[in-house]
Image 1 (cartoon, rainbow over the protein chains, first blue to last red):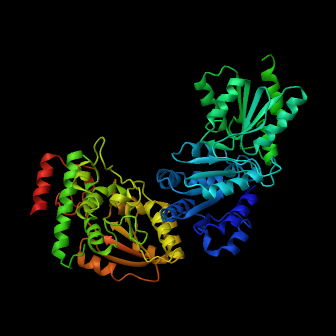
Image 2: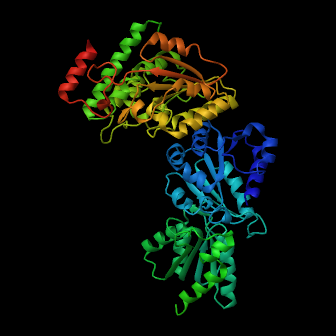
Image 3: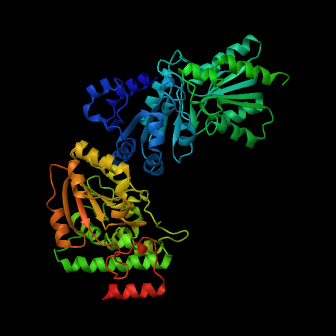
Length: 308
Length: 272
């Protein structure tokens, strides 16, 4: 996903003289072509994320279209206060590209997990939060982000992740994407979990349960219209995200549902408990532990909709 | 506005600025009069002579930039901007009041000469370095000045930026350190020793000058003999609360706002 994003950005950089990319010494090999093609557009600022955000702000104040790249916790958590003041408050044209959503960096451990980023970033003024679900969406967001004038957080997930689309998707910021129209039951997912959601939808339809599948690629601004529409036509709604259930997709949807007076079944799938220190494993192993596999989600949903 | 090198004139402007700051702070019960008074001369020197910026062209891409990284001392900046015509006297009346015009930390407003919102220490130098880098990328001739407090140098992000600017030899960047040797709760030497301060910057690849930050002759001399090879830092030896005898070198006046009696006493001294 990150390769698709950076490759597209590099192609587009020929068209935008003001494009600059900063990295805090991460992205091994990822930026090689970029560096070769555009030597004065790429700066490795060293392992110094707070400074990277300030540098980006200074560049942006002078009209540059700046992208900052790092692994999620270092980018959005280490430098959060710089992002809050220098980027969000000033409403600057800076794109923050965070890699490693959820458990992407499984064996690297807790320091590298991206479990709170959506909560942090969507709480900031002026910040747009987007999460592509596959490489074609990442490519589309690279294109959109280049034209977009303002702060944007782009959360990238697993390398070589699943493929949702077979052609360029019609992706519009702030407008959720209905991937499957069903009746009664709806799954709303984001990022890598969209593919997981699609697998659950397939499993449910084998049992005769026609399920609606929605890809929420933009967490902020949230497409409340679609959510309200789904609420008015579905008796059970489920959210899936590879993120802490507090402050992410599930929280955002539940806020809309609660205020709408929704009386159907609603359940959030995400990281519910703390991350155990003793739990060592790759991403799939960790997701299994946290109940984020298609099978486990399917079983839980089946229980919850029985008799509804 | 061009003013001849008549130091008396700069001193007279400085006196007016201090009175303006005293009025703003007394009227609103605001903090930070001490750290305002230590930076008056450098601000006057910049805005009335060295800085290529004017109220008529606040968004000119070629203008010099000034960033007040020690944002808590913004009453001094507001007073200087008002003296120089970037903002009005009315604007100053809106300082730190409900529904007013100016906060106790500056919010970006290019039309009134405020380049960047500051108030959280440790941000300004990075932003200034990015602005300087943009100038290099675009082959612009502007300079970027950023004023830091000494206590601010406790922030790790400052040293990330110092290292970055040194590495990239950002010779259009001028850091100004208000070295009044006092921070919020006490002396810098007691809280987090900075010495040898000049050596630290030098070791990071900067051209260093240490001067009396209240002496216009030394300030102008330093500002007119900057290195063209490296980023420059002027370590300004200053006095916290400068200009009012009972405020000078007293950590109390980092936060304390003068009561009516103290106000009258301070005004009397500044009018002498």
